[in-house]
Amino acid sequence: GCGDDREASEEGPLSQYGMAPPAGSLLAQQVLVVKQKLKLIELRNDYAVLDPGGRQIGAVVQASQSPLAFLTRVFTSWDVALPITLHILGPGTVPELIVHKPWFTWRCQVSRPDGQPLGEITKQIRLGKARFTLLDPRGAQLGEVRAHNWRAKDFSVLDGAGQPIARVTKKWAGLRELFTDADTYVVEVSPSAVDPLRSLAVATCLVIDVVMKQKDYDN
Image (cartoon, rainbow, N blue to C red; front, side, top):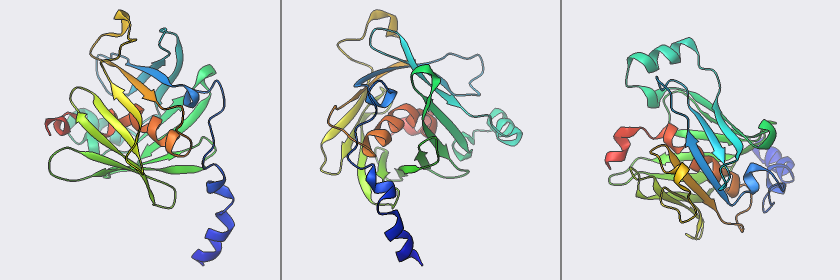
């Protein structure tokens, strides 16, 4: 039964714990600049990921939607109920992470391109500010996301001890003028953050817009 599976997986998902990402990968970067590409109709999410010098080193690309999801998105405000799959690509457009949000749920599953689960980003439904919890593949809490100000794109990812390991901000000292528009923000990741929390933190910073729509910002 379950116990046997757990024994067998002891080496699997957990062997990546505490691992640093491959050098040169998107996940290894300490500063990412995310630029949401402007579209006439915002029907597909598509972001460019740049280094602080403005060079594109990755992208966030939405996988194709079903016709039903597409029509629902055009004609209703149901966006948050819709399923969505995002591919986070690194240098050379190599897939590094896949984030999938099923229908009618606040849970985003994060996995490697080979399907190996890294964990989940789940929204805590609560009064006041929205919060997101980061879980490992077994459902144990690894960290959480706390907003200083959602609307201003200012929030932090904390580890299990409450220490910040990543931050999203629009006010960053090294941000050059070419970046200072409404659709650009900066992700800073601590060099000490390791997987799976590092991957979950980067995924959260890149996709939180997609799972949190404007009405949530009013909190």
